[in-house]
Length: 391
Image (cartoon, rainbow, N blue to C red; front, side, top):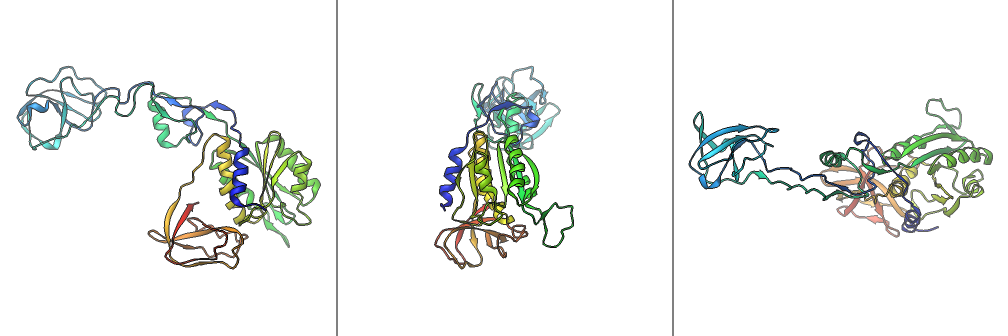
């Protein structure tokens, strides 16, 4: 059994970035850039007004100004601004020649139809200069960036309509267990509905990877091997839920070895998720995850998600918050690092979620995140500031 940090390092060292492809801009959300993106123009491409008002020369203030024309966004001024003159201008419009400031509309008084007076003592420039955001040829987005809404805006602004991105990993998901039936079935005696595959699919798709559920394998070596062979041949990564421990019917480790998957570890000193397994084949990776839903969820968040992002060339840095523990955390055994769910109770405060083990399928429903309890720590006192990893 190895520490979680050792397991994480092993997993991440095995990641090899997948090939790349171009996709339409409208299909680029949540993809990972495979190259730097350069701007094809200055942005803004001209000196533009930051607000509605009057473009003028600062040296003519605070005198009466003659309005020589009106310019709206999308149109060009036709006249330079001369002495004691101004141009009525709208937000986003090009500033006329010779004007060096824009006075806000609400800071002026209308003297007559074509004359205004500045009614304040001073004004800011209120002009966005050409190239203020970025210059032509400048790198605006970096290789490895995860494309979100704000990145799409930048891509559109520089005319990058087909960004070059890493291919999305194909991830196969298998559940094992004679006790499992599909969610639409009514469980018989000794049976439960299968939940892990569906939970994992949502977690995997959140990374941008493509998830395929291969159903339920019965607890026999032949059944596990048949389903695993198919998944291994069709995916970059395979996730197997349950069947990875030391029980009489846990055939996954044996089947992995029979199918040229080198198992790099099969136990982690972490709670929940001790029997988590990781193996590598010639062109595929495989995670054996625990059968209990909380353990499966947690290890997917901690190990699988960062690995999938690494396959796409992205260094995943999960967000975190520092919050106050409103109730004392206690545990009976401190022989493993533990990731425990917490829930919000007030602004800036969290408390441990009430749950009775990693099989408690509802344990995470009210959780806002996880806290890491170090090896050897049995108690975290009320009032302690804890690092919360959101989920």
